[in-house]
Amino acid sequence: MSGKRADGERNVSRRAVLGTAAGIGAALSSGCVGAFQNFLNGGGPGQLSLTVKAVPADSDAIATQIARQLVNRMQAIGINARFELEARTELRKDVLMNNNYDIYVDEFPVRNGPDMMRPMLQSVFTSESGWQNPFDYTNLTVDEQLDTQRATTGSDRELAVDAVQRKVAREQPLGVIAFPTEIWTARDDRYTGWDAFPPTNPLAFIALTDDGSANDRLRVTTTDGTPTENLNPLSVVQRYRGTFTDLLYDPLARRYDGDVNPWLAEDWNIDRTDGTTTATVTLRSGLRWHDGQPLTARDVAFTFRFLNDTTLETGDAEVPAPRLRGRASLVESADDQNTRTVELQFGDTSPAVVERALTVPILPKHVWEATTDRASAAGLDMTPYPTEAIITDNSEPVGSGVLQFEAATSGESLVLTRFDDHFLHRDTTTDPATYFDGGVPFSRLSVRIVPSDAAAVELVAADEADATAMSVAPDEVSRINGHDSLELYTAESRSFYHVGFNTRRVPLGNGHFRRLLMRLLDKEHIVEETMDGYATPGVTPLTGTDWVPADLTWRGRDPQVPFIGEGNSLNTEQARELFKRAGFKYDESGAMIDR
Image 1 (cartoon, helix red, strand yellow):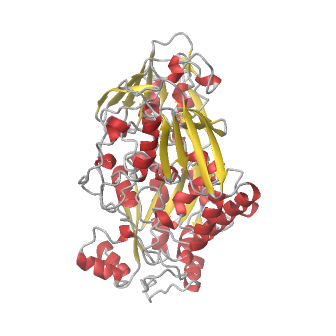
Image 2 (cartoon, rainbow, N blue to C red; image 1 turned 180 degrees about the vertical axis):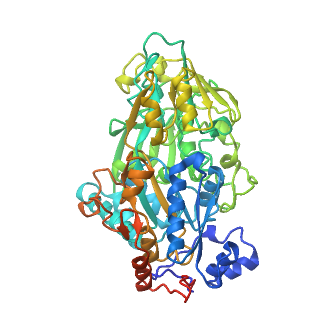
């Protein structure tokens, strides 16, 4: 084996080195990854062994089914494939923090246009934790195209985005499966406006209207108990979507109606001169934190410095926050000019990309500056070490959002109350948008944790909750439609299911191998059968947007990795032959050889 990729490009990650015992590290660095995996997985002598990880079915039945199908297909073509279920927090630790996986199946978090591709795929992020390039994918051409995408506008930017998508679709560092439809239910006898935003978007709660019969309390239910135990907006292990933390912490700007709009910011001015982009942001007047202290430009400048290095330059090396890093890393410097004005320097960056950075939640300096010390975290193998900021559960959060923390019972409930000093509650104007006028129409939000999607729907049907605060599985649609008191709501997805490959592991560093593995899956069948048609097959991470070039558009089959077979029936012999043509060997028993 070679320590290089099959395409000749070097792929080195600091995460690949840290935390490894000396003997095992020597074996891995000498190229014996496959033999080591065989030892762990129990494969036959010399047989290629790989593990596919996913969360249990009660957490995500769709991911489980996709992973199980991939394992079965890999076994059918001679790979010693093993299916491993892990709790969601453990899976996120292994994938996003420790780089301890071969292949995984999961949903990728919220997407916000082409700028998501930079932290997802640029090689500068391979040594970092979080959703920043967890695949350890390195491609110099993609790096250059992503830099062009960041700095240009108009047709030049479109061409760069197209080029990135084509390269990634050919090499498949991640295999995009499908974009699920968000499905939720609510009662409309107390609050209306549930169709404005999906319940996974914090704006859904702010856009509601009280129909006059409400008792000033909104009750929602979810299967995710994380917010009852951890409210740290920086934790990538605990935060998949920040629905409730985003109600506690406000950003400078929020995305809605297709644009990035002012929120804590009153306005901003973006200037590009001599390859440098500067955003001068003016805050609204009279902003306050939940503990009554003023929110100023000093807090904004602190937030961007802190997200990029949670040690605040007191450690041996930078320790960036693994969540929000993609946006925060765009800011090269942040300086408060006065109490309401902050200046952000971006380097050579287009205005559209600059605005994306303004959507990170702002943190109170007087709370978070005390969390810079080194921390010990069981099960985490970060580079170079985690800080208290990254591992704290933030059990009594102090933010500036429309709601503030009141109480939580681990695994059972969370209670948030209206923050009356928020600008939406205090001001009488219709800024920032008419449907946010007046802020939240309730004084108390009660979140109840249940064990399943079915239990969540039944609580709403029994009038013990007003809505599900998460998207439910497609098989709950018939249950929702069977209750006269329930309304069914759907929306385009903000995330996508994908297969993630650890490209530093042999042979997963080989693009031909990854392409062929993705051809073992029938995406159309997954959408129609596993997801009951409530999804759109994916080709690139930007599927469903205006950014996808015509040659990467789904037209009944994937134009880059079409399924090897028909009607979800894998043509095993053809698949084996394609692997052989790509240079992969089989022994006399039909097992793929690990070499």
